[in-house]
Structure formats: structure tokens, C-alpha cells
Image 1 (spheres, rainbow, N blue to C red):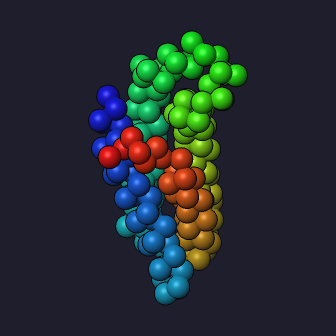
Image 2 (cartoon, rainbow, N blue to C red):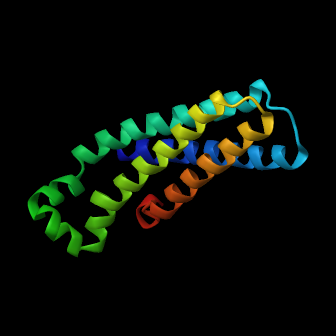
Length: 141
């Protein structure tokens, strides 16, 4: 399950990065918001939500969750590796996915092309930064 979570994470990261790059470049070029831009944002949204569901399953069947239950929250907070895997990573990912979802929902309500790209650039961009900040890189490779 962890392998699926890691592979899906790579695809989600690539998709989110593509959305942010496309939004920033389209803002610079003052382009129209096209169906392809919307589809790219939707693909990234779907991948992040799918990744979230796979991550939840992975979390509850992992040794990290068992260790968190054994130690309790106080004990887990004293161990940096357990804290990262059982608290910081999941919480940060929930926040990042919520921001990406807000960016998607917000863009649908906007009418100007520039505003739609800004919504993607800001919310998907912050989400991407949060995800990159809390990926357990040492365990991923």
C-alpha cells in the first residue's frame, strides 16, 4: 500500500507543479483560460484527493499509527520521526489538499481569465509548497 501511495504521490506532485507552472506562465502571457487549463486543474485535484484516500488507508494500516497509539500523542511528539509520520505529514497534507480544493472551487466562481489563473497559482502553489515541505524524503527513495 505504501508503494501505491508513493507512486501516486509522484503523479500528484507532477500534476500540481504543472498547474502552478501553467497558471504562472499564462498570467505572464495574459492568455485566455481554456478548457485544457481547467482539465489540468481537475486532474491535479482528482489525483490529490485520490492520494488523500490512499494515504488515509496507508496511515491506519502502518506501523506509525500503531506506534502513535502505543506511545500516545505526548510520546509521539517527543520522537521527531514518529511526529513527522504520524502527525506533521498527515496534518500538513490535509491542509494542502484543502487549499487545492479551495483554489479549484474559487476558480469556478470567477469570470475573468486572469483571476482564474491567479486562483490556481496561489492555492495550488501554496498547496504544493506545503506538500514538498512535509514529504518524508528519507523514506520516499
